[in-house]
Image 1 (tube, one colour):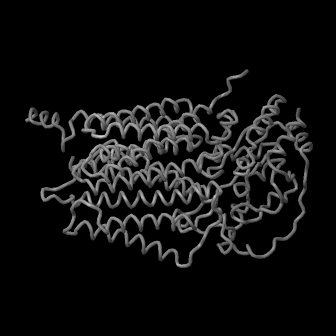
Image 2: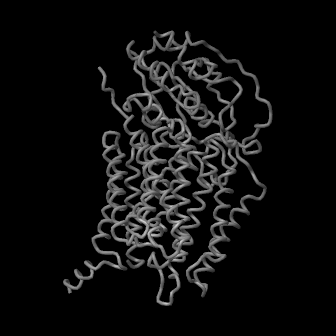
Length: 94
Length: 486
């Protein structure tokens, strides 16, 4: 993709982010941080590309290290968000 | 013409098939839906599932569209990360969420750094070489910025983690001339990125420029967070959240990957908005928070050195409090970081249940900066099984104090200090606070009369005629009240 197309997507996504995040209820700001943490680890895509190639051994190992770090975040981030969200309840007794 | 366009679309761009580009776009849309779900607790879990779906799409697409030479090693790496991540997520105490989030931020930052370095070593794999075999100039800027932001996120988050988990003192550490050092380092990073972008030697391999950018960025992340005190941590954690997003976005530019760009923009804006909300709730500018030093001994605030006058106050017991609470019609509870430290949330919920059985209306009032990260108190109350529709934000409940019989303050201090409304010389002047002085009766749980909150200012609420100080550990005091109510 050319730079201008990418930039267009980026700028529009910033606006989407702005409106979506303002609509998040303050009670869920901690889960918001946990889940943004998990999704920002989509950077794992870059780590996988580096790890997949065998041409540069150092790049491969850096990539694998990146895969481990991003995976901790992805699995840990989604799991802890799920755990927190499960606690937000209205009274079910009575 | 439309045919040739279609054909071009089917081929995709830069070696990525069109379906894969659409899949990354879909992943980005799922990430937007994940955040959208958080607009209410009722839809939030579905939102989180959308996030997982988006991530699965992005992962599978990447694995399928690349010739993976090391699939076993990659599988092991993902598995290892999954085990570590899930174990931490299961075991972590809810009071420790701020340091967990800071720790996770540091991993995103470091991942961005290693991906950037790998791209520099092996630019062919990332499709960022020009015809002459050099890295594209625009990619050099993106990679330089991505590595720099990632490194700042990493070292800053490590310091935030150490401060939040108590492994490092929470008080600000002030270096002389730190503003000049910070600005100089920042200028250095940008200068080297600029120099490298126009440098004729832009081939693969890590030159001194990359090492210098990485090292300086690590240093500035460290220097930026060191002078920031414990009470400003909500802003710091939000800011680092934002940086981790921008780092992902920078890498997304390099790879031309829509999922990464959309996510980076979402996370970047999310952190920026949270930082703004936190700063607004303290009536402080972002710059002054980042410049640091709030709450330091030599910080702003006249008279912080002189001894405070001794003023008379009333002290009560758990039995007194239980008696008054029972008689009340409506009670508003204001929890603060002290509640988290004392782990008093479960006892507090028991107290709340007992009062409701006796027909008392109980509400919780939460200040945006209560705790060490945005929404920290809400999570702790949710953990203790307090209904979320009993929990209110500052602007929604502040008008109700005038009608409330009891304001019950547990582990909060600065957020109820009327000096923020009246005393222009106070360091917290202008910060929105709860109008507890309007309640008929105030109970204030505090460990002792010694400590005076993070801003280091005295609080007139202690000495009001309707205030009863409950001087004890928060959990013990609430348990005492529960016993007396039973």
